[in-house]
Length: 426
Ligand code: SF4
Ligand code: SF4
Image 1 (cartoon, helix red, strand yellow):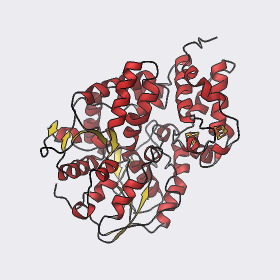
Image 2 (tube, helix red, strand yellow; image 1 turned 90 degrees about the horizontal axis):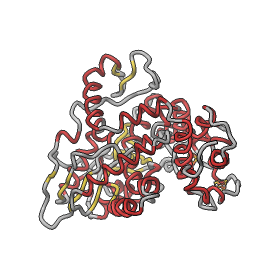
Image 3 (cartoon, helix red, strand yellow; image 1 turned 30 degrees about the horizontal axis):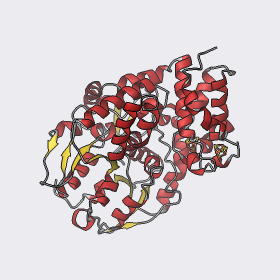
């Protein structure tokens, strides 16, 4: 029998008891859409977690696999009449399983990659150089496709190119603004730093337009969320502590991120998962969370006028809500800014608030199911007749792009900030 006194599931033991197995969480659960089986839905995972805690279940590959079938989208938490925090329970169950039977090879490898940004930087440089050997350009789109199979990368997949120079290598650590204007620490995130550098440039241009001082701490690391998929909480904790120390180096008014996932980590998951057993760390993480704002949320708060910065040519767009913005109630701010942008017409898609199917490493580990979830999203985008789909998360951008291209669609995927900054000289 394993030692349950230190079982991470002990943290959520009371929450587990709150589930009355009513099944209301089934509506809108993307994992249920893909797998059509009870263990995939919140109720099933809670029952499974109860058994893992009681230690009366074989901790085999099937148990691990069942717990991996969750995108941590938070839809079940929003639907639950008893406020059962299933996402928190799934994270604790994954940590518990990882403690009892070890990480899978896949998740151990992910931990090694995200732990060290300089290693990631070297890897990105190599990938940018060697990309043409492994990938071919898809003529009708701007995506890349594999030339031959590689582990965990489906060759149907459209992959964005790695930037030749990471965003953080292009700018100094402090970009001074006007006296008396806010000082903003920019938490860049891996996807913005290594892939969608144009998102970082748009953020920088917008906050400089508002006279803000923008600080880009050089020692910032991955937010660690990919580690949560496999229960590698030791890596998440390590990254959270290093990021916290790095953000605290500067006296800033706000910590801003243009990535919904990174924002979700800093704002909710760090205090919840990392600060649980350490009150001193918890209060520092709470202070970081209180300062953390999504870029669109902060731009609206600081009074950005999109008629001065943004622009379209009468383009019809639609907007996808990233889960990590929706669960923080940040659905109105990006829409309000986009609606005020000249030359932009916003047409709502059906199910704009539904998950796109990414779910961090779910999209790598369960690629086929991830694309099954994406089906409805791609269809809904195309049905609006929009030429552009905007969103607030570089991870969603990658997933939406892949789905749309596999549908043969030419709809362009952009970050909200790219539309808001179109009229600015950079
Ligand atoms: S998690 Fe909530 S909604 Fe789902 S079965 Fe339990 S009580 Fe019902
Ligand atoms: S977090 Fe999302 S994917 Fe996971 S059980 Fe809840 S609704 Fe389903």
